[in-house]
Image (tube, rainbow, N blue to C red; front, side, top):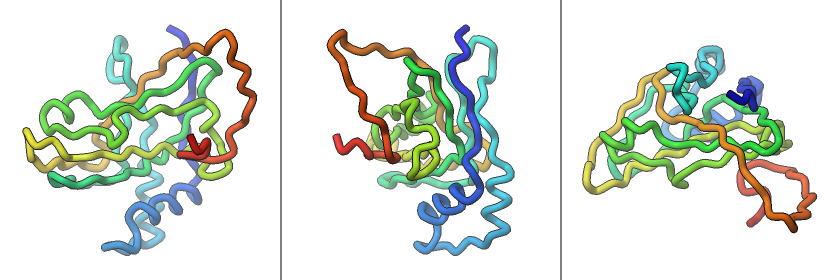
Length: 176
């Protein structure tokens, strides 16, 4: 197996900012002690078996996602990836199969230059959508449960590719 990446936690300051942005001020107010406890309990992604291709991401909080709604989860995780590789994010198979829940963007792509970008340290967010009319079920995920998975894959470039632009921001920073 190729060892091509290393998961890390984002800084507490980054996590707190992103947590408040996702959950604070709308219907809840969270105190510093609660956010710090959530941060301290963040688990790095892990494979469950030696032949697993995916790294399970664990939810830092418990949440309920009713049919017809979306939720954006700040994972507290960033990843350093070797050149020539990307991390592809998917909803866990059981969640898609049993509830019809999917990632809002279908598949998340974490590029190597997302790591430690100036906007958000490379903080990985997962946005789930519960819009499958076949199921119309409410999904409940508890703190620490695996809810999505990341798989490292190599990628190629065209023979005439001469891109030398350097990322300067986070999600959507290339304006493409």
